[in-house]
Structure formats: structure tokens, C-alpha cells
Image (cartoon, rainbow, N blue to C red; front, top):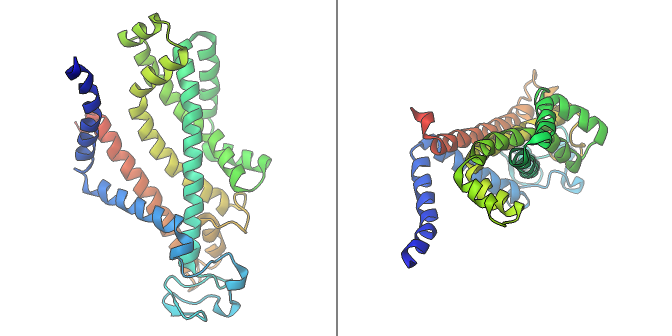
Length: 301
């Protein structure tokens, strides 16, 4: 009896080890994951690792404006990536902008995931008119481009981190709801769900303890893709001037600020923030692709 109880407890660490071993078979995915953690560290530790607080006006010197990469400024340190038109150290501004991008991307991704899971599970489990209503709304939203919906919502809600997160959640939850509904519909007719429904268990327990764990693998893949999409959408909105206000650091606003100088010799103002944005989004997508391959071995056939 003790062996039968202990077996499931030991199965989870074994499955996790197998997942890590399969994930590590792709050197590109491993390097991408390391790069993501490095970017996360420098972004959230920006006040500690940045040579300057680029949004503290007391630390800025207008004489340091448009310094080329590698130039020593009035502060006595090297501006590795140069400075912008306000004398801000570009490396510091990028670190602060990365922090904003990660906060928005992760917050929007988690909230959209939770909302999408609840709606998808409810639609698949209860069926009937509730399923038809939820999925028709989801299908209608999926028929519209996410950037267009986000633009409309930001225009209504206004600028700010909270408003951007809310707009991205509304624009992205449908992807999670559709994925959850598809996977849960397959699992709903299986014997273990029928057995759980025949017992006097609360509906919430059946949904979140029995049904949800078996629909998580595809959701993990969608979550990684949507976090990268949220970061790119925020940068797009800020580049268009409808995202974060000028007082908030953002990779999109940094790119927009330097875009007017793109055809001059002050290339670093837009190029370097764009490189960091591209590397972040590509790295997250590469990790997501490998997670998909590991969780669905048929992808490798």
C-alpha cells in the first residue's frame, strides 16, 4: 500500500527531470533560456547595475547629449551605447525599458492565462448555451487583429502601465480560452472525468484538480508565445505614441525617440533598443518552440 501511495509522489520529479533532459537537447533553446534570465536580471536589477538613473532629471547633463558609443561623459564613466538627445545613458535607459516590458508582458500574460483558463474550462465542462455564448465571443475577438483591438482599447482607457496591461489582457485572453476549450473538450469525455463527476465532489475541484492539469501542456506553449507577443505589442503601441507616457521607460518609446535620427550618423538611438527588443522576443519564442517540441513529441517526427 505504501508503494502505491509513494509512486505518484515520485512521478512528478521524474517527469520534471525528463522534461529538462529533453529541453536541453536543443543548445539554441538552452542559450535562449539563459539569455532570458540574464535580461530579466539586468532589467529588474536596473537601479543596481545601471550606471545612471536615466529618468532622474537631476542626474542628466545636457552637455552629454548625443555622445557616441564608448565616449566618457561628464559623470566620469563610459557610455557604452552612447547617449540620447537628453543626455541619458542608452544602456541604462534600455535596462529600465526592459523592466517595463517584462512587467507588462508577464502581468498581461498571467492575467490573460487565468481568464482564458476559467472561460475555456467552463465552456467545455458545462457545454450547451454557455459554451456557445463564450466561444462565439472568443471567435469574434480572434477574428480581429490584436494590434487593432489594443489600439482601440488604449484610445479609450488612456496611457499608463495599468491601462496597457488591461488592454493586452482583453486582446489576448481569447487565445488561451480557445486553446483551453479545445484541450478540455477532448478530456471531458474520458473515464476519469466521468468518474469524478459521478462523485459528490465540488465542480471547482473537478475542474481545477482533475481537468486542468491535463490541459496545461498546450497552455504553457501558448503562454510563452503570448508573453513575447505582449512585449512586442507594448513596444508597438509606445512607438506609435499611444502606449506609455514619456515619463515611463519603454523600449518602444526609445526606438520612437531615435527614429527621426535613423538616417543620420546617430544610429545608436534606435538601433540598440531595437536589437534588445528583437533579441528578447526571439529568445522567448525559441524557448516556446522547444517547450512545444518536448511536450508534443509528434512535432519532431
